[in-house]
Structures are given as structure tokens and as C-alpha cells.
Image 1: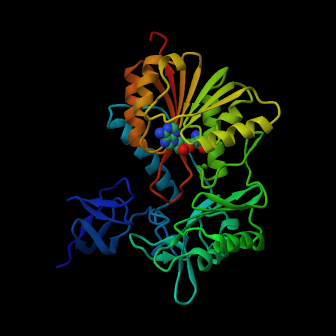
Image 2 (image 1 turned 180 degrees about the vertical axis):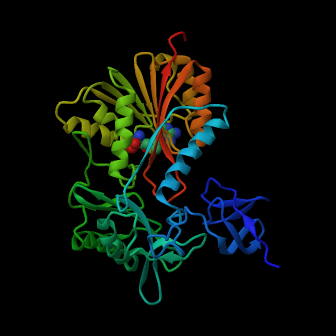
Image 3 (image 1 turned 90 degrees about the vertical axis):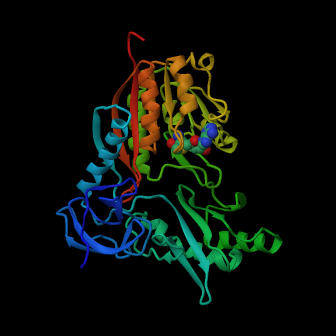
Length: 409
Ligand SMILES: C[S@@+](CC[C@H](N)C(=O)[O-])C[C@H]1O[C@@H](n2cnc3c(N)ncnc32)[C@H](O)[C@@H]1O
């Protein structure tokens, strides 16, 4: 007899979860499903009773492609679920906070994508990795990417015969910039004279702004500029950049609101200046970031810009050497935007230093909630949380939040 499973909730990866726990990818709470159980995961799933939140996936590649996990759910359901993920992470630490309305990036707005490109017997294959597999799914009409990125897929394909090996796939990161397409390749053959020449010719032939190979710039025809406020920055190849321009703006507005009125701001995990440079329109900023190439790019962007207040930079590993209370004492606001692991060591020092305001940007609600608890124990109020969804249809959740020091602390 066929076994039926009732889906109770979604897990962190966006999979439906039934009692057991049994994981059923691409199902929704309230649905009754059947399928083949392999360990704890259900495959060949049949949805016996669909949820009224189930929709037809907009993309025809959704079944095979690993790029999206939640296209089978209504937009409002996904938005509510992402806010709930943050609420639950806070609740697990015994916390709650006012939640601002979520901001979701529109379809076709991603300005950067890493595409897998493989040489095949017949030619080349380019696309995203398939679901839980090493296959490559073509993305000719991807609903996530800016159309200009999709139009650039043939450029990525053209690089495989030049420098791809038969064994592995090239990871080709395509980024839209003011100077044109910025292309950074990893996983290719080691550079030698003939390959370098061929890649330089390809840069010319395809009109690329810049091409880099395993971190080395091969050719730069136009500066691949990213604009942060009034500053034009040329990031190092493959450097971190917020996934969508509008998502970046939503995060920036939250940071500007959270730090409003501050005259001296320290921006920790500053990247190439996404927040530091716009903040410098009204405040002096000290930008601290682990990658020296990024602080150099930020500094050069600031030097070329007109009308900004002073920005200083420091390349520093904030996990090993967080800023100490005596270094933090001159700032009236802190911006904190760490990687997924959060900022435990830095938060311990902030708890001692007690700056008036902390704007915390996070791409991991679990580490955010852990750090939030430490700040609240040190005398802060978590005034609001704003979820920003730059990764539409994925299980990924990002947020901005404001912490204010309690008057009595
Ligand atoms: C989520 S990104 C944010 C960057 C920037 N705030 C932005 O919005 O573009 C995190 C940044 O932390 C930097 N980073 C990673 N590990 C670090 C460390 N141990 N110390 C300092 N910075 C680090 C990364 O290079 C990256 O630029």
C-alpha cells in the first residue's frame, strides 16, 4: 500500500518536512504526498493533496535546475516564510523584535552569476548545476538573472575550449558593471603564454570590460566600475558584491536610517565600500575589511569621488583581531556585515565598548540571533528587523537590523 506523508512545515533548506523527520523537497505545509523513501528523503514525489499556496513554477527549467528551491510556492507564502525563518531564529534564543515589511528583489534582477561551463564531445555546455547533482542545466530563459547576464552565457561558453579541461567544469562568474561585462574564471588550465594570448584575444573579441583567470587579471579594456553613492569603485576580480542593485539599495537605506545623525561611523566587514562610501556623504567613516585588495579599491574610489567626508581603511582579520573597545570608543555608530558565520568575537568587544547604535546586516538568521542575544545581554534593544530577499525563490534569507544602547546601560 502506498504510504502517504503529511507535510508539517518547511526546513531551513526550503524542503517540506513530515513526521520522522522525513524530508520532501519542493512540497508545502498542509500537503499530503507519496513517493519513494531513501533514508529520510522522499524522491519521485507525487503531491496527492496540493496546498492552495502551490503555483505553477514560472521557469521551465525548475524541475532539473538547482538554482531555485521555492518556485512552486506563491510569492506571498515565500515572503511570509522568510520573515518566519528570522522570527524563529530569534525565538530559539528567547528573543523577539518588531519586523518591518520584507523587501523582495524583482525577477530578472541578479547582476552577478556563477555559471558552470564544461567541454563536451560535441562542444560546450553552460548553465547552473542541477539539483543535487553534477549535471549542468541550461539557463536560456532564467527568471533570476538580469537579461544582460543571460545574453553573456555564450561568452562563458567560448572560454571552455580555450582553457577548460575535459575533467572538471569552469566556474565563470559574470558581473554586470558600468564598464561592461566583468568575467572571473576559476578551475581552468594553469596559465601559460599561449593561453594568456588566447584569453586576451577573447577579451577583445567579446568586448569584455575585464577578464581574470584564477584571480589574475588577463586584460582590462574598460574599468569594471561599481557605483556606491557618488563613488566609482573598481573591485578586485570576483570580490563580494550584493546580489542585486535594488537589494543593495534596500540594505543601504536600512543602514542609513539606523545610523542617522552619527558623525563618526565604523563599517566592519566593509567589502569595497557598499555602505562606507554612501555613509561618507554625511559622516566620517573608518572601513575595516579582511581583504587588502578590497580596502585598496575602496580607498581609490573615495579618493576619486567629490564631496565625501573623510574615509580611512584598514585591512584586518576581524575574526582573529576584532576592533577593541579603545579603538571603538570614538565612533557613535557601528555597521556590521559579516559572512555567514556571524561576528561573535567582534560582538564580544562591542558589548564592552557600548557604541550608541549598531546596524547589523546578516545573511544567516541563526548566527544573527546568537549575536543579537549577546548584544541584548550587554544592554541593547533590538529595535527592528527588516528582511531583504535578494535571493528570490531560494531558501536564503538576509536582513538588516538596528540595535540601540539602552539609556541606563
Ligand atoms: C557579507 S560581505 C559584506 C561586504 C560589504 N559590507 C558589502 O555590503 O558589500 C562580508 C565581507 O567580510 C569580509 N570578510 C570575510 N572574513 C573576514 C574576516 N575574517 N575579517 C574581516 N573581513 C572578512 C569579506 O571579504 C566580505 O567583504
